[in-house]
Image 1 (cartoon, each protein chain N blue to C red):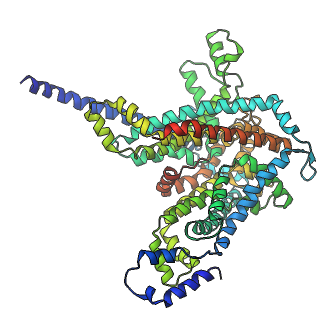
Image 2: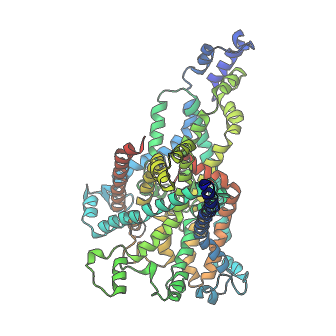
Image 3: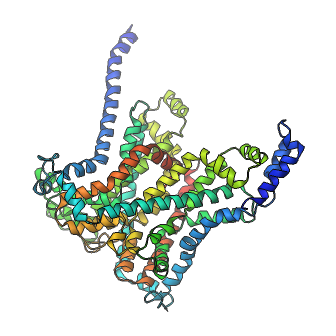
Length: 349
Length: 288
């Protein structure tokens, strides 16, 4: 029933002597078979996917805009226009979340990418054996659930019984509060040295830095895999030619690997920006595991998505949470467009 | 003569430095591997320690291996078997749904002619750009209104179609020579039969990749099940483990045992299908 037309054609094709002959089909005939009439049954093929995606992914975009223009409980919405947006833009918590999101992205992205490129380049060296095993080990943290690994890391960071403070104290360094420390790392260093610094030098909280270390650990292997795939696309002749011209290892890396890897780097940047602006799981799981409130301590790990979830889950502020989600989407879109406009042009060669 | 001696004297040195460089690179790689692996090893060995030993963090291996921690953890979590069954059921059902819907749609986009095909395909791709934060709230409201909260369908149905899988499979289907299709049509094959008996067996790599990532995403999902489940017996494992953090209190060794149990299935799956994970990522790039 689904494929009436195709069957009809099959029969036609069978009954025609041309198709019956064993002689190779001509290009014209092949094209004639391929370019057939409209196959209406195609709509039945795409229907299931489009029903699900339509209901749960496309319709919600419009509905989210509607929700963001309202206040109140589910099914008892009251239209308030752009009030929720105004409320967000005048809220200290919102701006704190926005700054935290950007700082977190800046703390995690460059380091993850630099480390990943470094390890990928070493792994790519032709003499390295067991490349597959190394790659598999590096990739493992990405596969394991965030909740599971966050619990382990939160325990390593634990102020009283954690491994990290045990090592620090053995080395004669002061123990730190890590995930429950709302003070900035700049401030902590200054206090350690006994100097005063202006507040704008406080820097991100130690808790946010600890979460960032965890994030770097989690995503490094992912970036390594992508960089490795990119490295293998660079023709070996390029390196050989440069080597004959007397280039040393660093020059090879600087003048061949970096420019020819640019499309891969661009890809990694685009998805890392999108991913880190939306980060939720690692922060939520770390907060839980360190028995902090969501986005704690003192809101210092509250990224936009965490803030939105808190508004939704804890306070049932649907309209406000929807407005935050839409603002966040616009930020993501702006960054992505910026990446394509500015970096996209430069990375193509 | 001078050149010869110079060459001779430089040879062992070159060999030494070259090898030194290689050794150094291996050393750095091993350090990196330890950095990636250490938290897991630390978790496993500590999960066998006594409370005092685990919280002292002084030794890597336990002085006495307490296998009873696992039994205690299993009993204390309470719904552990249920969490497992829930997660497996949800993940398998989601994978099945995604593969069915994606295969059909991908086939239509790759092989069939119909009005609006390109526009629909672009719309589909555009949905990949929508951040999940935006769809979260409307979907939550929808689930509430459908009275699906605390039901399996809330955890499965919204995720049974994936634009990404459609895209991945379509690209793969396009790479299958169309001569095969022409031959099959001549042999009297309809679209569905051609898809099932010829395309699918040839598309194993793409099916495994998309199934695997759907499975992983489902197994590790956190925010959505947190929102739509209240009753503990409906929760999947991630939410269950997260809520066990409070219940375990300071009994860190039990918490670590519970985490170890929860990650074992994924690690086993990863070890078996490691190649597909990594090649899938390398070719398409998905970020969770």
